Length: 90
Image 1 (spheres, rainbow, N blue to C red):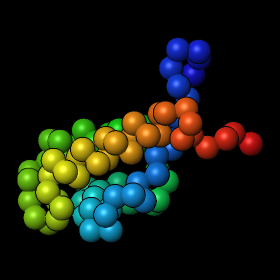
Image 2: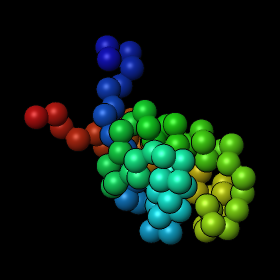
Image 3: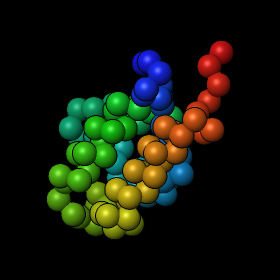
């Protein structure tokens, strides 16, 4: 990506609660998107973050609370961008 922007391939969403991962996965699946696994593409994860912000606050989609889920996902994205947390390239 260059010297100014960190190169990030994936985000580990395993640290989201099981309920939050399941709700996000179900919502994406309903919309025809592939349901994410533990590691998901960085760009897709950022897109999910924006889609969650625009989503209606509901118990089904946000069993742990809308803003708590969004903030936790943002933390995981930030963690992936932090050089010390990125996996080594082979």
